[in-house]
Length: 316
Image 1 (cartoon, rainbow, N blue to C red):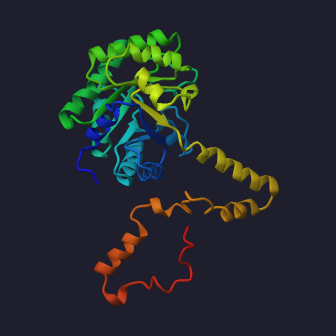
Image 2 (image 1 turned 45 degrees about the vertical axis):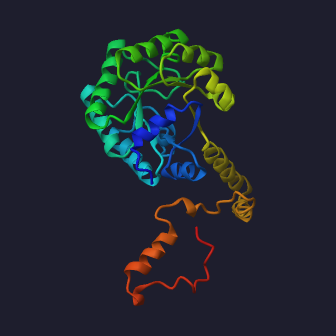
Image 3 (image 1 turned 90 degrees about the horizontal axis):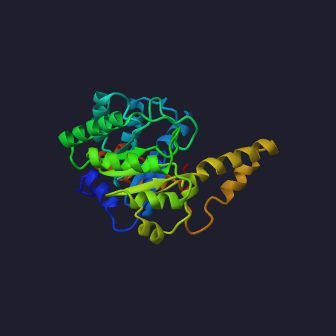
């Protein structure tokens, strides 16, 4: 486990001389996967986290619900966790509580958007922004709380200026430059761009660490190309197969009227050198640790017989 604070570790990711690939997911398990794979940080998606809980990404979840999920994720991994904090969940005093709660949860940093409440998922119709003054106040309230509680904690200013009604690239850049000039936000995040050409224009006009996101941008450029145009990080939505492929398998069962597609899937579960079987290797505490702890602290007569077990190697 690193002795570096989560915020300091996340700052190093944003300040990397080349674009850092940051796995982007919804669950503590996804954060553990990112750590096991060797990545330096994990981003907990607001939209994906909501969808995986059966909730739409429309500001329905409360601060306490979002923070509790973030806390479980931060406890599950040793790499820094970067979280979506929507609009900050209210007025300036609520934004300050938001920062405090995420810091207490062990999170490394959050992004706060300039949408009016209730927010919309990025890139969809109906996005509206708060005034310049309200957005600046929202961010400065967050920065004030950061500086009082944990100066390493990262505050990212997200602008939806591109996709908002009446918006566009120029409005997004204007907002980003304003936030850099008038607040203590550490990073700028452009949401919803449709082309890398738009992103390149915006990033060149933005001082300090910045990055742009949009569905048409995902996986379309190399790290070297993104580094050249100033993309600080690139979120990697590696969990998309966890929706599409699970749905595909379920529909195979429904359409066949049989459970045999699951059996066929299990038969190939351990195929290939990168197999993870049932995935138990990612859980905490690890089963080996549980056994070691029992051996250390339980009297001999209370210990389990792990060696005489016909189910060894078949755990779910």
